[in-house]
Image: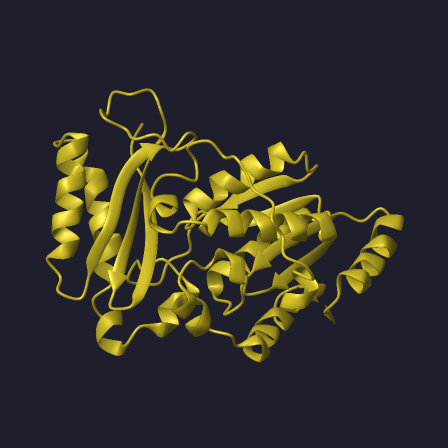
Length: 281
């Protein structure tokens, strides 16, 4: 595995790869890698000749400075994990490398960035769009891989790719969960032992909600999920919404002709976890 830190060096490497007609898969991350990230690399390996991973904790997508400061940074451990899978190039740029000057670009994603995460984390998706567009411009992969845990982010990246006319296929990959159902996240390692013992109620409630769909209205299901999670004193729901998977518009009745997903954000002390579940169409 080759480790590069500059866009110039990466472009030179990729130029040689393209000259021999090899396909390139890309997995952008913020590090603190877990099995969910590694599964994305495995998907890339199946589809492409070369797999590239980036590790960059992007400051522009954190609307909470403390969240940015405490975000886990364990690059040496990440490198060891990447060596055990087929990662061909690791790109680890500095902040100055990715933001040599202030990037003042704005984006219009319609309703996609105004609900759920967008409503509670103002500016977050602009920061995501800034860094993803910069990485796409540098790597120019054939395919890029993103996990479905960050469901709203995935919808926005698809929109961004279309708007900026990147010739890149966005591949969405299933959520990878711990044995107790908790969606894998880099933030999980920040949980105390006691918090960790309680957070599995989030996924268990979502799975149960899918069955409640058969006997409850959309409104009743939403109320039940929020109430059930909040009954645990360690957990506090920030939002739970059931939306159209494509438009992210709220679903008001199960008979609506749309693929439906329920998205939740939960505070566990100072740590914030997200998850989602697909409902029956």
